[in-house]
Amino acid sequence: MTESKIETIKITSIYLNKIMPVSVYLPCDYNEKDSFPTLYFLHGRSGDENILIESGLNISADKLIGNREINSMIIVCPRIENSRGINSSSICKEVKDPLGRIINIGMYEDYLINEVIPTIDKNFKTIKNRKGRYIGGASAGGYVALHSAFRHSDLFSKTGGHMPAIELQLEEEDKLYFQNPDDWDKYNPIYIASNMERSDIKIYLDAGDKDEGEFYKGCSALHEILTEKGMNSQNYIFKGNHNIKYIKSNIEKYLRFYTN
Image (tube, rainbow, N blue to C red; front, side, top):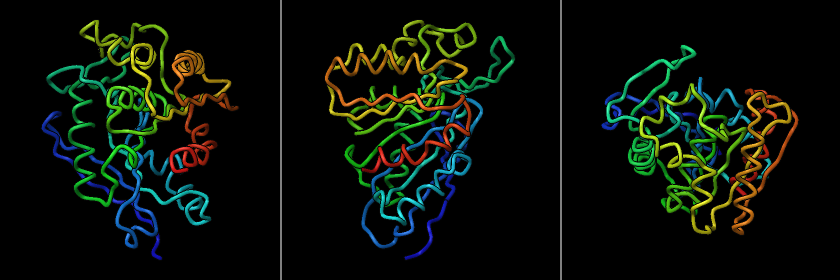
């Protein structure tokens, strides 16, 4: 059995009109099997594809796979920039919000769904159906993971929002994402869940008890709706703040959810 490895690939995106890097974790037994389940794990507002290493995902996966506590899997961390993973503009560009922060607008949902996933399925030994495909993320990446899974339930069987940036109302600094007023509801996990049919998708929600954005409130509201619909939803409040330390401290829990 060889060691696991991380590959970086680059996608020349038609939707975004630029080159986008993607980090891919391949487990130690990658050469010994025909196909593997795949976890797409998405970074937050100021992050990038290096969340694969910064969160300890690769180290934790090595440990749990090596101890046979979880099944082997491929982990994909695409760069989605500060985009919220939505189709916010036909032209991809950077703009500044009222706080002076860079916001990326463009066709990011189409990029993720129509370019990243097909590229990974073409170039790696993935299970090419929803049963073997999962999506999760941290902070803004958790928001992206949830709306992607709910809007494309034909592609994913599990989703996780880890301290997900689910807001109960549209904040002023986020209005640049939603030039079309209908887009706020269109991508809001709580609104989507309220209007979706019951699904067999499995959902994992969590946030820290000291989360500065109080995103445990959004998790609670979403979990209540999902539970009322009879869907398989878990919701946890763990100790911690809204930071990478919180993600690192719980990463093994996440991997167990996705693989077992």
